[in-house]
Image (cartoon, rainbow, N blue to C red; front, top):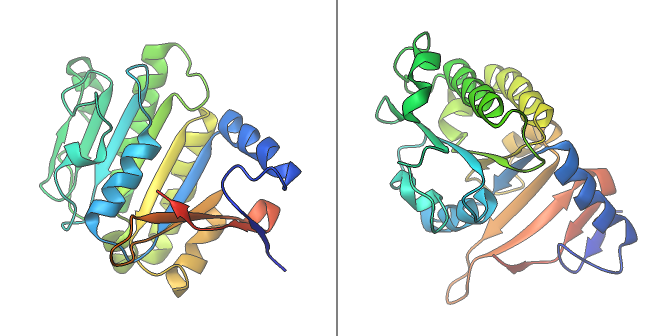
Length: 229
């Protein structure tokens, strides 16, 4: 039976705080689900990318329903920052730090819905930021992918294979990556992808209410209650 946590910091679940600390220290990959408007996904992204100017952020835009890249970044962060790398498969373009030009020479222009190329570029960006920082502190690197839908629709098996490698790279630098999949949490594709991730963050937007989230934590066999995003 799945236990229920009142919130993402439920004091009644003694393992949860320890699990959160371990997750930050070891690196994490989060699957964000829920059939929600783009604006709700944008709000979740801004939160998960984290505030502050001391972070390295890599954003991948795949789904053509996604708004402008800036909507995904928190206040104070910009696509023009030297600490931000954006790959836009929708428009086959990228925005990267000026000193990263040499490391992209072998990548070629982004191609729509190409999961192999996307993950290769994200790994290139991670390697670039790790070298620039001479090692990354836990959770300093943040990665966001919005969304996985075109990739899984084209080739689910290939998407799983490449995401497994990307997830390992994120953990290797103690980073934090989130991957959006705007479908109901109970769909088969969610179940197929869940083993690749440390946690699922389910989003919902009810009429007349603020967006909400709840966390599904397989490692603890636990789920939080719904709280405002």
